[in-house]
Image (cartoon, rainbow, N blue to C red; front, side):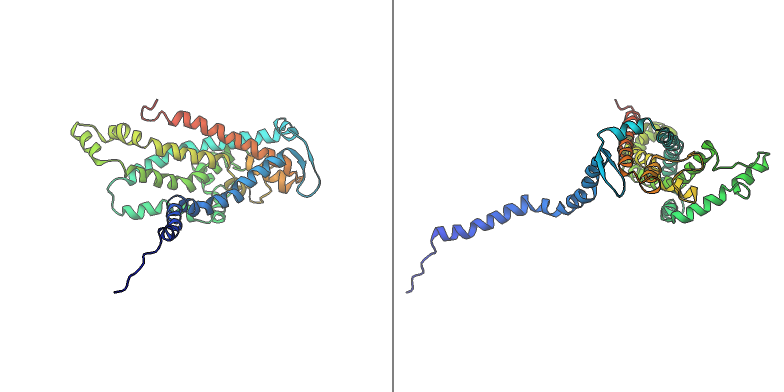
Length: 317
């Protein structure tokens, strides 16, 4: 008979301790390890440029050259700069002119696509076509539509006796043209987001309302709209950020891409002003960085104002 000696307890305890530590790390540490690439990339491409831009805004710096500390000098000069305030006025004007109709049309379109229609899938895919269209192609098409001599819109206005409009020469006309470009490109995107939220609303609410005699219009105002409030707030936030950083549409509308926004800056946005100051004009990157931070403040103000109004949808207090 052979006797087998059991291993000492302290030896088995040593082998079990690393396993417990690995198990504890797997539960508590592994999730952070898995999401760490996002935070690493965000730190490199998000936080660092943000801090570096703030540092540049406090210096009298050119794109290539000496950089001297200027404190709040760039901000004081910007506040007194008429061209900057003209860009702010243009940006806010085009934002309001484009965003308000865009959100209304998105809501109407989403409500229509939520109905039982033939070819509903194709219709839903169709509203996303403007997003996959080349920006250059959009610029070419709209430049032809708004052409002074041979444009479709001026031809239609001529049928009712209105003289041709030089769409690029005035503020109001260029704002309208650029706003239609923005609406054409982003209305379908917002409609799909609102449609996805509509499909999460329980059908029982509509059935109960129908039994009580509520019309389709009343169901929309009393059920659909209040239930969509969080999604509407999200869409408004995204539209606010996109509208106040408007860049692509006015640049392609200009054609020559000089960042001046027309001969008198009639449709120059703040984003175009920043690029012009940093890379097209005097290459004053410190001045452009200060303008970028003031644009950030403008976005915060616009977002808070929109949140103040949208949070009251559906009777919220």
